[in-house]
Structure formats: structure tokens, C-alpha cells
Image 1 (tube, rainbow, N blue to C red):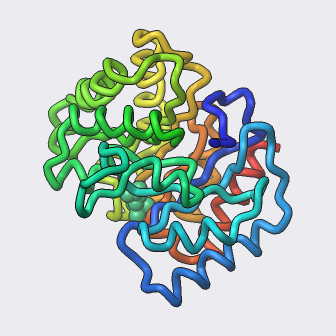
Image 2 (cartoon, protein in one colour):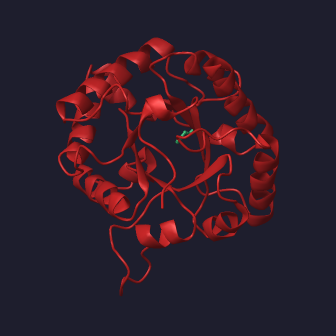
Length: 265
Ligand code: PGA
């Protein structure tokens, strides 16, 4: 069963999750995972579970799940799930199966999937399916550049959140990642001020939905790297980072984990 918590207060420090997307090839991926695990060493794991997470392509999950011991400083997440349970669903990958292979967390609503046509109700259905399977849904929300320019950032993020809040009971665990689409893979990181403003709006939405807004972990994602992570993670409002490109090199991922640990001390 899941060994994480949804409460900020129960966590020792910042959360750093590496979203590998559809990369790297097998040899490199196995090496990367082992280098990250070795780099974390015997990093302490608080009552809240691991602070570092890898979210690799699905075929890696079975391999890596077998290499993680109970209480390891590294958690395993999936990038997506099917809302289907076990059964005759060719090609689908359900939450129960992911959990069975060692996953504790799953991204839902990443912008790269929303751009592929995934709707708010579909994202909400996946969050519910994740919860049913005992996985922690990490809901990704964020505006496009046009939406920001039009002054619609908060409205977009609230709409994306609302679908999930209407579906997933308020007492069920949920993490959120604010990922402005214009900052993903572009090298254009949002400023701390921009992130804090949106995180505060997210906390208010969560509270309106009957959740513990202040206690819900909210990560920032979008061109986080070892140079900018320290300043972002120093913000009290920013509970962690969801890292794409910079999570594909052990040194840069570990440097971001270290930056999070340093500001938490
Ligand atoms: P990036 O990706 O760090 O490469 O911008 C972040 C993400 O898509 O989660």
C-alpha cells in the first residue's frame, strides 16, 4: 500500500520528481536510475515518504520496482494511467497493475496529454481511478502562453482543478503540480512571484473544495534546473519541483534534490 502522505506538515522537506517522458533508451535509463539511487544513498525518509521520485516510461516500472527496497529514499511514479480496472481492455494500463509493480504515484493531466486531446472530465476520471488503486494522483495544471497573455491564468487553473475536486472526495490524497505550458521544455522558467501567485490561488480553490489548501503539496514544473531550483524551492509556497529535461542526468537531478534539502534545513 502507499507509503506517502498528502500532508505538507508530515513531510521533512521539498519534493523533487523527475518526469522522464518518453526517454531515455533502456541502457541509459537503467544507468540513470541506479546513479540516482546511489546518489541518494541513505538519505533519510521522513514519515511522509520519499522526497525524491522518478517517473519513467512504463516498461521501466517493473524493473525499477524490483530494485527498490521498502523505505528507499526514492519513490516510483507513472506518467499516466487508464481508468480501466483489470479486465479485457487491450492496450490499457490500469492503476492496480501499476501499484502491483511498485508505483505509488501517477501523473494525471500533464499538458502533453491535454494537448493530445485529454479533457478535464477524463483527467478527473483518471484521478479517481488512481485513488481507487491506492496511487497518489499528482494533478498537473497550467495555462498556455496565450491564456496568460489574455489574463486567464487563474481561471484556467481553477477550471482544471474544479473537474478533479468535483470528482475526488476531499479527504482523498491529492498533490498538484503547477506547470505553465509556456515554461515546459522552453528554458523559460516562471518567476517565483508568478508561481507563488498561482500556488496561492490553487490553495484557495482547494479550500473552497473542502480540502486542506495549506497542507496540500503543490509543486512547480517548467524548465527547472540545478541553477534555478534553489531560488524556486526557497519559497515557502513551493513544496517541490516536477522536473523534465534536467531529470535525465543524475548529476542535475541530484543537484535539484540537494537544493530542496538545503532550503528545508
Ligand atoms: P521541463 O518539463 O522540466 O523539461 O520543462 C517539465 C514537465 O513537463 O513536467
